[in-house]
Length: 155
Image 1 (cartoon, rainbow, N blue to C red):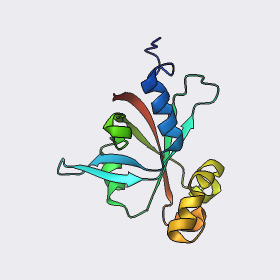
Image 2 (cartoon, rainbow, N blue to C red):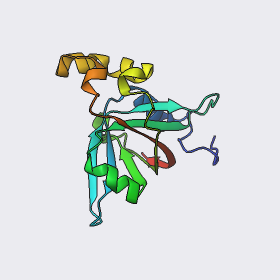
Image 3 (cartoon, helix red, strand yellow):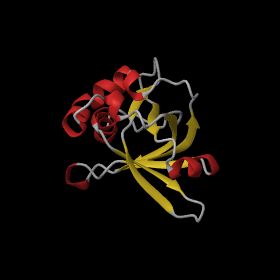
Image 4 (cartoon, rainbow, N blue to C red):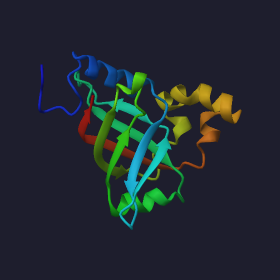
């Protein structure tokens, strides 16, 4: 079953199921921006996949927070089309690449520690590696962005 109106792969396939599992469970995704010299700039980031409400297919968007002085912010404002990808997965057989445009969210968007699903996803990591809460660990990451994939590919 294939539906060209959707971005994610068919959920009834092994690859489609693996994509959704990784969107839910992975803690790191690589965000690739392009700097002013045209050089790709990969950055590992924490993210939250937010499925579209009432979308049984599972399409949605990435919520990502950034430090307000991160060089990638300028790149994303000037060249908003970005790529995101996971590491290869089990035996490097789950390659997944997403492309889409960045949307900068309002300055009053809740911080990472105030987004319940984001806080729940990263609570153990914040406690283990930073000995603090998600809100405290992510406090410097005050710029919220949303990336809605326009395309997804992989194998």
